[in-house]
Image (cartoon, rainbow, N blue to C red):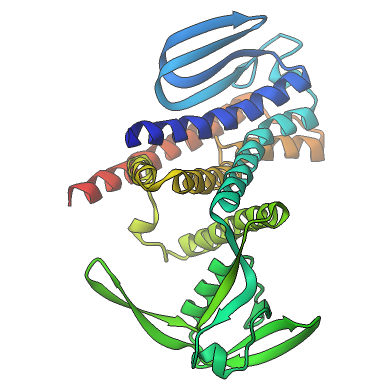
Length: 339
């Protein structure tokens, strides 16, 4: 059952993405030849108007086949004949839908399980926070000058700080105050291993209100984007480990494990993968939506339409590189599972 849930999550992610392209293509007056859920041979097909709707056997993909998107077409309603700004909206709509799905998924989790904001609920006795004079109901504004979006990000800032003492900016009774704090080392057992980490001894408030949950959902997406930009920066410097990059095998395994834990875990992973998919698709790399958007923006700025053959070759090269990356991470996934 958990594996079925994992495949359904994958199918939802791709279908929502392609639906974004589909609905905006219809808005732009672009002819859509087929909207497919899944890949491979069709299980069900239904022609409605000019569009064929199909359900295909492999639940690991899907597509929105627009007239003239990847080939020359004389049809006046082809993708290539639409106005540039409309084509740009259609291309970006897939990533937008994934962002929207992520916000909804995180919102469901926050409403069901509660969420923590940056207000302090409790302080451990004799902890660094207690010694520094931090009080209950103080709101954390920044840590060493950096504003955290989530309590999770604050915790990571504390853990990763290399300073002997840190500066915490708080809001108390409408006024900003700075306090110096010295995090202490604590230990936790994880699969038989003792792990050391830094802490300051504060507990955040848990809330369930809708507007707070919605804001937290937006901030979770913002934090995910911030983390991915950080990941890209480290990747360019060669500071990324193999276990930081996962392929479909590990992702399916992780979702299946989450399904055993409960609904909230599945929804959180759905949101996390969806926002990652949006970010990845917006990268200005050939064959990705971001790469296609670059060609359209070039046309909008210069008034010169890129050569269709050149664009096709660039996208084929990009697609080939993406396939190689896919095979590489899948190989690492399988190798990691065998060990």
